[in-house]
Image 1 (cartoon, rainbow, N blue to C red):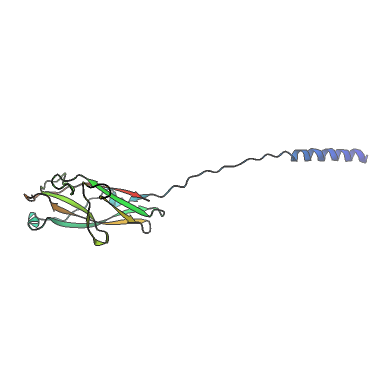
Image 2: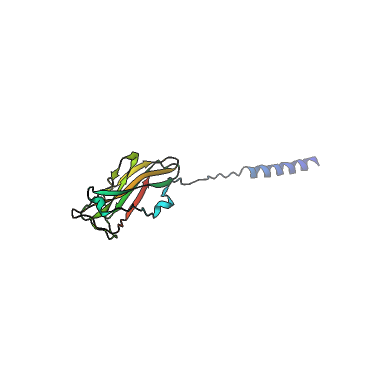
Length: 177
């Protein structure tokens, strides 16, 4: 009686051992993408009006420019961005092509100078310049790049400036790394 029980247990053990020998392996592949950060102009700088101070025609009697207005442009960036390049473009004045034209105003003989004021030093962006001449690169600090700027009226005609309004549009493009 003990022998059939032993044979039954041996057969059961062989069956269990036989299923344990079936092994299958597989592999898992993980993919992903880590993108670089981005920057964007501060919301208040996306479509901004810079109001130059009111000046008189007589202000141009003894000088070629008047009415400086200083301001800042800001780019907000992710923490991995180290530098932001601000590039300016617009319509060049017909008589002074390095200046930005008064395209919608009624005053004549006047255009706009747009300048960076990094470290207190004015650099006039030439409206007709190449991209390098119309750009300045600013390092980021705490996720922000702030470029100090200025703009003013400039006399463009030897026949003088006439009263009226000034309307100059300039575009700013930012690139970053």
